[in-house]
Length: 147
Image 1 (cartoon, one colour):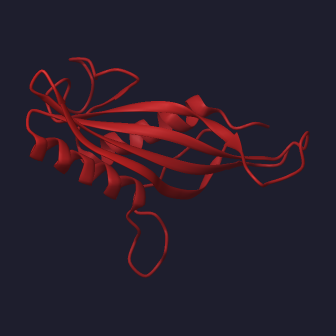
Image 2 (cartoon, helix red, strand yellow; image 1 turned 90 degrees about the vertical axis):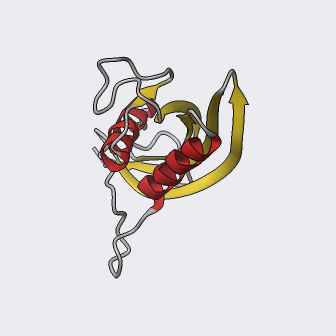
């Protein structure tokens, strides 16, 4: 079974909202009805940037690994607010439980298991029309179970 980029993105979006306590849109700003904070700044926007087949099983095998690239844009009214939200997003993806090596915030992908996480790139802060954003890219390695 192949890895669904959409399922990985939805699971990551849910994890970000829970871990940061702020709304996170999928490909667009959150709506007023988005939980937990609607369109109140700061918030995140998550973008699915595609995936590459991993070094897992041979092509055509029922097992599959993929490296899924996600972008998180943290948005705020000031550079400091956007940077703080980016710190929370980084922590959400990469923090580990002390002594166990397990990730602090699980990413529960339907039909797959996240087996690795890394920060791929940080673009830093930019401003457009008095709205600041801080862009980060994360790579999740996802494996699917054998059939």
